[in-house]
Length: 145
Image (tube, rainbow, N blue to C red):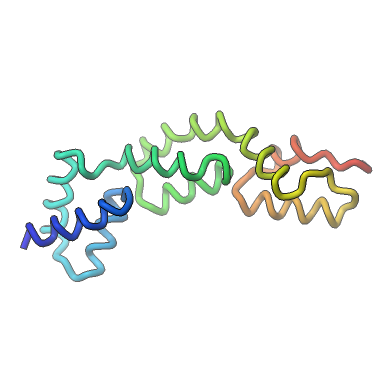
């Protein structure tokens, strides 16, 4: 049975990186016994076929440039990434935060808001992408205020 579980896990990992917790949850939904599943996942970790650190790196590469700090950290937390790796990721996210915000804002809007309604629209959009209000207002300075 463990070879079958291993093969299933490897099929998932062949498509994309998974955090250990995410892969555990995915395979557990298929009715696999938790203890057996833990053993297989630990084996895959020892063989470096499953790595939370590699998963974090891949996710940061995919998200930085499109999403803000809050969005990315929330996603890492939801995927069950260990706290230490999330803390380590914060520094990398913070380095790119302002440049990412400017890029996203310019691509979507490209000009300063002309009134409060437009300002609210831009702020809501950027907050939805996970940027903080402080950072947003550093980039968007209303032209009439």
